[in-house]
Length: 599
Image (spheres, rainbow, N blue to C red):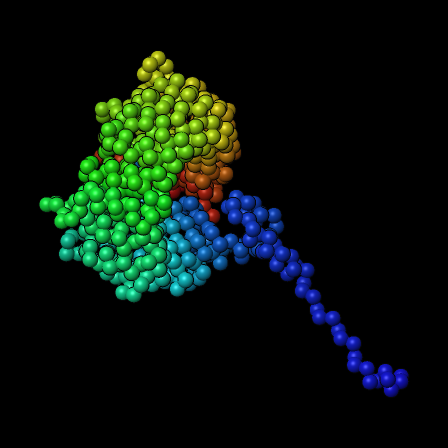
């Protein structure tokens, strides 16, 4: 070896490369970040173990649509980096008082405990729906959430009070969203009410959305006004019925960036309010460029009809208008509906009558979703809307995607017309409040109307039936409802054959809600091949037997079969009152009340 060779530095060794499986995981995680759809991500996680690990590590938005289907501990292990969490509790039929009180009273407690033990350290957003929540739960939650937490929304929840809200306001210092919507809050004596608005930090806040329209007691207005004034980013504000029109005027002056407004009572305070008049409310809606920025209006919980026309100033830019607490008349609707040419979502009471709906059909050509709710929900209530209003909507609003329509009578012709005029419907929920009502013009069952809906609206994912329906209607649903994911049936059908058509034909069905139908064990057992693919099955007031339900539980051990007895002790029978069946990754729950039997 020469001296020159000895002077040369030794060659550098190449740095060791990462293991092939680690490279694959890194690539997968990068790719999966571009998958947003829940079904796409779920499909990707089933490919193999490495895809499952990568999907777990990158999933930021997690939805548990049945709180009893997966435990908090399992969810936290599966998705440790979740930033947004949606939790749903009771099934929808609980809204109709079909579940006994206390059915799942402690369902949220394990989740609150999980947060306290450090689960979901990256969480920024929590959305809760139809879940019983106590003040203790909210207090534990508020003390346990990470400092990065921003958004809390509670919809149709119950059990908590002002104390729970005060805990959230006190401990979640960086809160951006606090929305309490349609919740049944615990009643409190006047002496027990806590001033939760005062619990927010005294310095400027990050609040962008604050909604408490369902909150029962009055809030201290001076505190509320101060909170709004020191929340410069506030774009959504929904106040309760104790906020008067004059107070709303003052709040709007402090919130120039509002895009969504829940108006409260929309009436001057008792005895009148100094300085508030029609012109000033018009100015309030016109100021700060609100005619161009306000896109959503709700509230009007005790509206003074003489002030209702003031909203016309902003109607041209509205995409959402909720009048479900305002019994407006056809003459009142006409004062502003002509300016609602950009409206996409409309909720009204049937007090608008057919004449009001005809005006909606004339002026709201961009409408995509409408709900016509009953002023009086009794079967023998006065008929205010009919097939005339439904036909007017379908003819005028051809881009309609979703409709919920309460009425007393209906015709097949009107429903068929809607299926032809609005073929892009995804949600069709028709509630004829009188049980077993046929087509009132011909006396025929409503089979052909609902048959036309599933035949002509190929994108339909949710259907609620009503009226006099025979097994033939369900034959149509099973044959053509191939995209259906949610089906609600009440007081319909002749025999088990109807249920067999549904379970054997609707291959994508996830949620099935049935009440007071003549379906028994034969119909139930016809769905054994499909139940594992469903989120839940609810059957109440049907002809099920204990033996039939036991057979389902025996053959499908990973399904939780709950038998719920909602009848008073002296009226209970040997039959099955309520069957609630759902998938669960963790088996039956432990907090079983005495009126529930798990097979």
